[in-house]
View 1 (tube, helix red, strand yellow):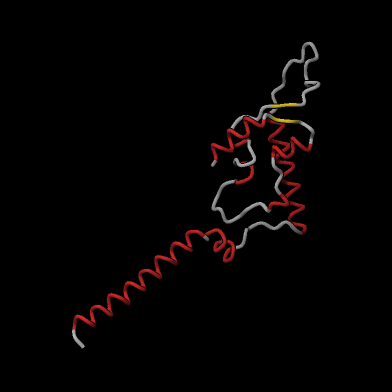
View 2: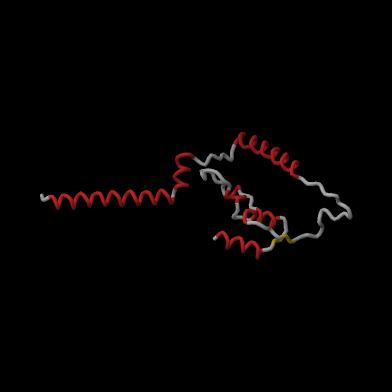
Length: 144
């Protein structure tokens, strides 16, 4: 066999291997979340005594943080709490349902299952408090 034919075969084989590696890299890049969860799990367990203990500790910590962050205002004239308020404005991308309140941070290997998510705007609706939907639409368009 001539050297040119051997070289053509060799380059073809190398091209196929390179294309396969490139395709595999693209697929792995697109599916990294699923691959990471397969090998490492989500890191979250929503069952058992560990969950109850963790939720109790978390609730205590939240109460402590809340207590330290409360600002006391003089309620002269009895204006607080606001009475008859049934519509609010929600400002800031992170306060919307697509913001950090759901997505979190970190390695990305853990996600909150959809049935466990408490979305801010949904909780307002469930509490019969309406919000400025034009403002929410602006934040949605910003995200997309």
